[in-house]
Image (cartoon, rainbow, N blue to C red; front, side):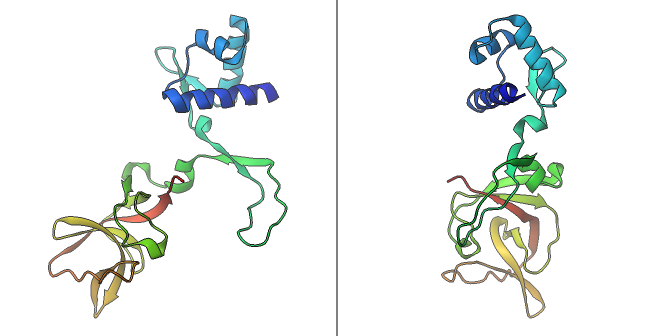
Length: 191
């Protein structure tokens, strides 16, 4: 399976570039496999391992496991250096890690700097679970005066307010209705 791991990573890179898997005929050339039978045997092994499946029209398609990334057994210290065991213990997909309810989860790009002290920066993607209620302290997408904003939900004098996580911004005290669109459950940042 060690060669299969190498073949799989090549197919994953191909998919990342083209958003599709190559045809059976193209797989041989891509992976350096000379015979159709060796391509068929590899595809069968990758299907059996749960990385690939066939669509009704007999094309190859990636499964959820195809998108799983190795998770190192040992966490890395953010303090003093420590030995790390980088052997794979399990694999997970970002969806499995961040998204509990796919049907009610959206990604929203952040614009602005009002939440920088919470570690949320301009251009980040927040993972938001759509729901009409939230708890004090949650970071929410709220609708105030028909406009959306990302802020921390707080209570002041028995009324809900929205606080920025940047001292340059004043709290938002809605005069009318404050509607919760959803609660932030994760963050994605590409460096």
